[in-house]
Length: 223
Picture 1 (tube, rainbow, N blue to C red):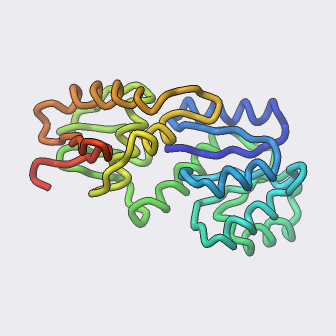
Picture 2 (cartoon, rainbow, N blue to C red; picture 1 turned 60 degrees about the vertical axis):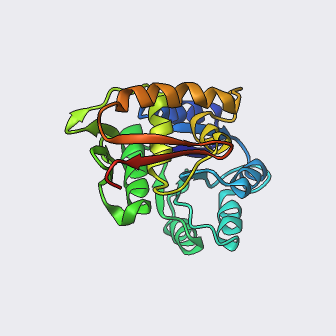
Picture 3 (cartoon, rainbow, N blue to C red; picture 1 turned 135 degrees about the vertical axis):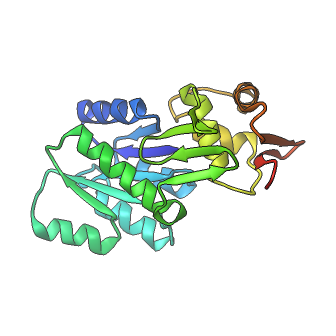
């Protein structure tokens, strides 16, 4: 899953990004509201973390524009201001959660997990495709009840495919979920990760089907 973090304090942004990446998410980091507006308009994110006090366009304005476009993307607001009026304003504009600075990274991670869980499959804690199960609390895959060992990018590929049951995903769509804005990677690199994941799914009854010229689909043998 891909998260957009918009925070104008470089050191805090780096700390948050590293914590989220360590938890298994792909994270894009931006530092001002105008850039955030453009990135969110292009889509492709599972969640946005917006600081309120952004340069050029504040977090409230970015959130308002997002909701005006009809986007239901989960948004967690960060603020150094703890006034009730600010929290009420953010929630009324459509924020899903609010966290005042300073905060513990473990709490931020827990809130991100909760928002993502609520936004996917009506709050269910697990996603399934045949014998393959993804636990949204632990962010771990299991196959026939045993933990499936995956690298971060292999996991990102599998997460993206599992999140879109019955839908073919192109290489470009998968690449947008696997690689961040600061990473240079050709969509053809996705073939490498598809091959590796296929090997790990062998004999399980869960397959990644190739639709030539279109992309890939995750499918269970009995599905």
